[in-house]
Image (tube, rainbow, N blue to C red; front, top):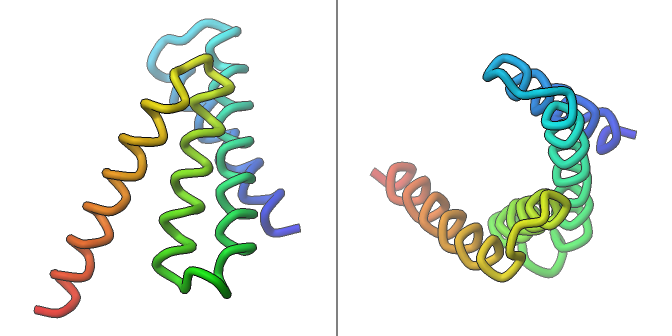
Length: 102
């Protein structure tokens, strides 16, 4: 499926970035798995919420879900990740809309 292919690509990218920055084998594996899982969850949420939230809303929901999944798998505070991811995605979306309307 396209979602699985994208998740594999995200996982490979995350693992590669970690390897290039000097991560050990455990860090590389964790980065690859969490990046792939976050990407897959994000894509699924985006696809499942498109009809309800519209394109922008489903993109935000997918991005937040992916970030929360990846962070949770890394043992981070899920509430903190959710809040910061939601705020960052809202700001980025508003900035894109402002630039697009200029």
